[in-house]
Length: 357
Image 1 (cartoon, helix red, strand yellow):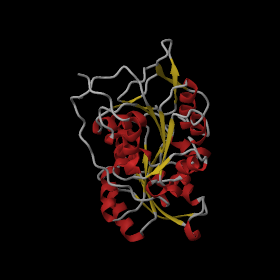
Image 2 (cartoon, rainbow, N blue to C red):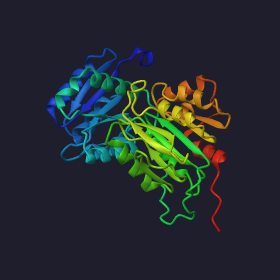
Image 3 (cartoon, rainbow, N blue to C red):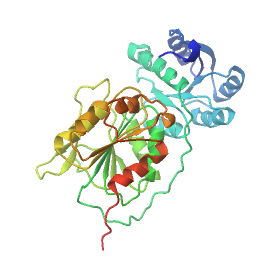
Image 4 (cartoon, one colour):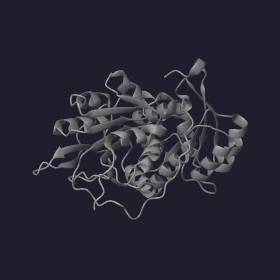
């Protein structure tokens, strides 16, 4: 991944741990396209150095004494539009804080291994370098209008499943989902299955965050639960999510630990192909921001059914245009649209439930 004009990506590393500052710095400096311009040991120190050094990317620890990562991120947003990649431990509190950071504008996050010395593994080094490079090319996030959840649904829960909306996304996805899901009305005539590339523990926090700002019910998917209209199911981290028929021919969710597909678990392709295998008609597939090509094989399989509509997010509003671009190149995408219009396009296709009288 070449940087524009072959200029090095200038990075500031922020962490209260001297050990972590050293490790992250060494990893980044091992790549010839990255230049370490400095380190900071606190949020206050980071703000001063961002103003002075003007880095292209900041790596920012979530948990720091004094001004923590979230507070620092908010202040960085006031200083300028510097892309930020968060560093998070694998705990419930850290997961919730990370989701908030993505909501506040962080481009992506990196999890610290439970054994901190594993951060020097080949896979983790590659992840850190890759995410910094992606962040350096990112576009500013659009402003999200937070919506209040309707506590008294106007429509009874439907036992009939008429439409399924399948959403696949990766880098930039948590923020993008906050533009799409809260805009869906409570009487939508569809169920939603979402694959967001995320590690274990973080998808539950994402689902809870989306649920709190949406009119539909958003939850982390559970094995063998029935797929219901008006629900949004988020694939748990490190599990493939599939749809299959039960003994009454109703659709239910199946979670598996089958091998990764294209380095992903959950995989968008696995979800889409499983739905195509059920023979269910009236499907909408949506491919949003993310690196790579996950989902492009799945939409081709889905398109063997004529009652399938495929939507791709446009390049201008993607943090990373990889997944939508790969989808568009298959030739089976029906609609290419900005992020702000995705929910409208979905509703044009699936409509709303008939009101019970």
